[in-house]
Length: 281
Image (cartoon, rainbow, N blue to C red; front, side, top):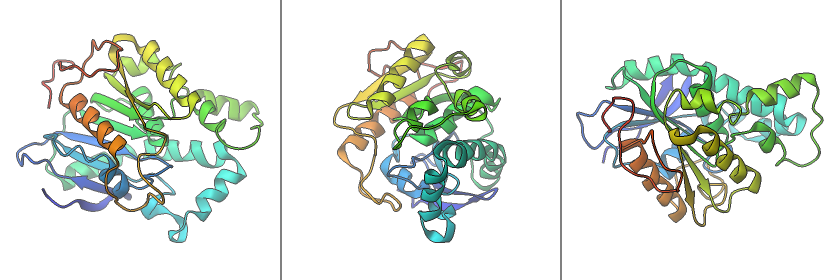
């Protein structure tokens, strides 16, 4: 197995894992969680998808990992306390999405990957980035997957202490990150695997079910027994041994990206198939 490759892609930190098949040129891009694992390197260790014949490039979110202010999470935590939506969650998702096209171009210049459609994967807040790439950009995607994702940002805001006081601007912002409402746009772009831990927050579990229901045959739900919201132990900044529930997620993602299913039955079971005229990985 090749060691991870680390670097910067248009200023975005990344951890890249090479395929076991040295001739493989397909690309899957991921965005990590704010919970553990909360860096690109830690997410790569939690969900390496080592059996895929594709490059897996894990990108770092703004204010996280190598982009923490003064090497500490304190600045990010202060933004969450100041205004969880407008100072923290929304700016992170927007910046990560807007910097992605240049980062993707840089990845292709640095690594031996092709220029065809990519796979996208996001965990928790990184899931909102992956969904926004699907719903709000034209970057070609052959398949997507999200894990314990921020599907409706209003649900995520509700997980933080206190009653959030919405105004006209924040109402517009939080509605712009409601991907159940944008399910048609997501479904029109690529099939989507929605992974949901059976011990995740009830609101996020409900959103996962609602998204799969709204997307119909273009989406599939995979429930993971014993999985709460995090995929790794704290502090979640450095690579750590893969936990058993994360190993189950990893196996489901590996099967999905090999054989994404546009006509998947919503039974929680991943079934081999094809996607949009492109052969599975």
